[in-house]
Length: 263
Image 1: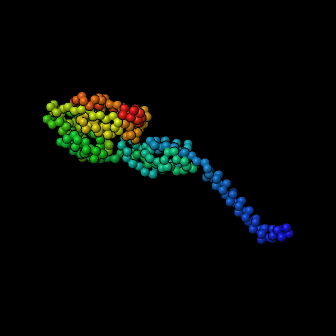
Image 2: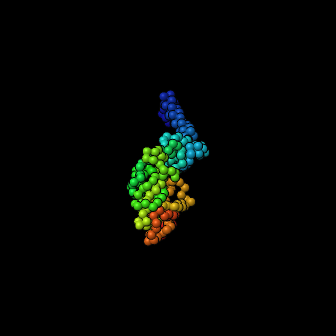
Image 3: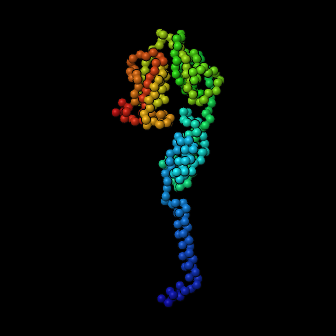
């Protein structure tokens, strides 16, 4: 007992013990302070900024304890100019308060492409050429001519557009095409179960127009529409002949239970 008393009364041992206590206390205090500063264990959920304007995204970020920064832009057809396209980290991620979220937005200035010369092409050749230039086939306008599906005019916003003209990428180009009365019949393809763009392509490939697109209420943006599937079409029969240029109406959904083949 006397030896223990002498051991702890030694000034070297006593100072060493006080140093250990001090360091342990300092470490504990630092951990507590860091926990308060970084809100250790307290995480927030990153909101979904997709399709918001930058102003809307900034306001939403402020209400949710994160910061935003626009770091890049891309061109997305049919998406609102300046809207948020993607974000990092993604929506739903758990992050610390004040975390920076990096945004890629749809460019405000649309990309321009050069209009090709389509007159003299077949409808299918013209459609392929439009796709290669980042343009879309709009309406097929049939007029009497010796050669069926021969392109006679190319139109943009109801006016002829010459070769070499500058036009927004993704723009719809209407084609005036020939129709020989002896070769003017076609059939509506069965597009039920097809995704949006593939269904439209199939209708065009059969020399018909899509005259109605009805999207379910749950389809809120262009990305949703790309994933939407046709669950109803009118006319539905592939056996009844139609005049080229006739219209087909399509109803689309993201709910697979509405697709006849899925039931």
